[in-house]
Length: 206
Image (cartoon, rainbow, N blue to C red):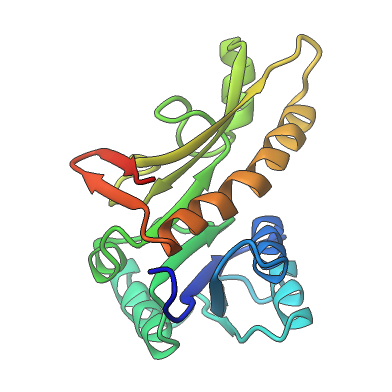
């Protein structure tokens, strides 16, 4: 994909959008040959929308109201993304589970980041799960999205040591620093055509 037009990203958000900011920064620094075609928020007041607007990125608010089920909501979401020409969908603090409608519309082209070393501690409050279990290391995982909860093929992982005096907040803060480095790197690999999926295994091409 290198040498052609920048890959168009659609970024789905629900909250603060710090990973959105990390991707914006990577693009503006020249380290990521991509363009954010739109930012779609499930929450009208999400600060991520402010971040996008500061960089003149088109924003769309796509609330749950008016839809009878998740498939109907996702079908409308697919239309929004396709209308903007999106080629890779990025979940950046998006607090909704995608249905098969979205997953099949963008096969192997939806990424998520999770604040744990999957397959350990999927779902919500992963940092608390890790602390409660007593692990010595945690971290973050970028993975492709399938129809399960944090079960898709793993693209990249970063390891963070767990300190004896860590709280959920302190561990989350250190993991988030790694997220801001690792997520743009995974997106860069996709944009350069260096990701090959073989079953559950993601191969990174040289």
